[in-house]
Length: 162
Image 1 (cartoon, one colour):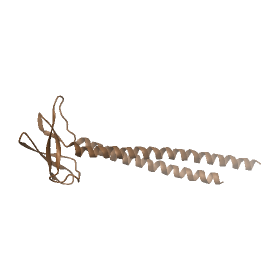
Image 2: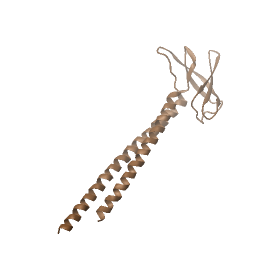
Image 3: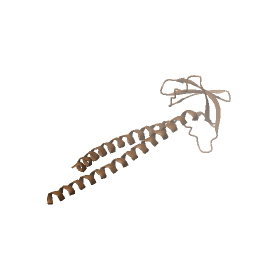
Image 4: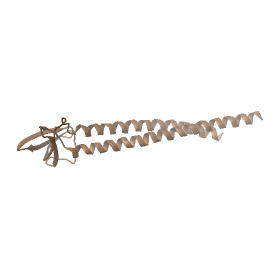
């Protein structure tokens, strides 16, 4: 009887564990993917053969969802928006700007984008480790629960037969 009860409890807990682990995997995977996309969106896209140059610039304006950068190339001022916001970069904060030498208005601020890339890796990794690990633990508990219930049925059948 005790084996049957423990088996039932293990099956119920295993189903819940698999469900929660799937949600963790999905949630952290989506967060990791989103951060990864945001991080790459701030990157510089240059044509083949283009030369990337660097110059010092500064955060010109932030509004909580994007950041405007000011920089100069050969005395010509450029202002551009990044669809990236980081509270550590307030107005006036100096930043290193990478730009395409043949098209200086095409730019990136790698240090701002790198933060989101790291966050993407961390969230994605947590989702994979805990999500898949939890699913494996849930499956093991499910198998053990089924085995215990079968053993309890065999034991009950052998007692009834005697």
